[in-house]
Length: 230
Image (cartoon, rainbow, N blue to C red; front, side, top):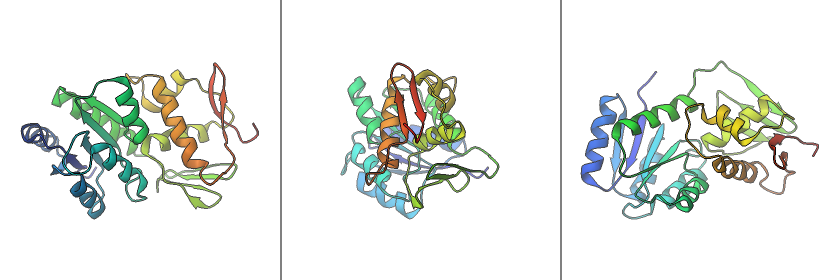
């Protein structure tokens, strides 16, 4: 597997130095900046495999950097982990709704962060055989990491991509939040079930853009299903 390219956006010099050291030791190719605007330029020049993004950085805020990375087709699928001293639930939800895939509150153990980053990369870069999935007017190329609806490309974040893939593999089946957490985030995940609702909302917004029919059915007290006939 080629070296994973990481974009680290962190303006605390001592923390950045510590993280660069830990990730280089794990054979990551780390590019570091303290500035939000420069982070966007670096991401466009060479798309990273993962972004570690501090909430409070110079120039653009981390939240705005996250939003713009998600809006761009080139970086829409790049996993983003936010680093922040903000631990309140509403801040965590806001970070997730903006497009972050995970959220690490300071202070944290660098070794734990390395483990979280590695887990995210394993999920979004699995060595899978070529496969195409489709349902109704949705098509997914799991190798090219592209989703189309009625032939139009839909940019999805990595978590929404995995969520949709799971639904496409089991159309019509109703999955509880707990089951989705298990299947999409993994058994060892400590993510709250409310997070599933955030990602479902993001997935719905993306695939229903332009007034297309909503093909994700909410089953009260039960969960969610991919169902074009509801």
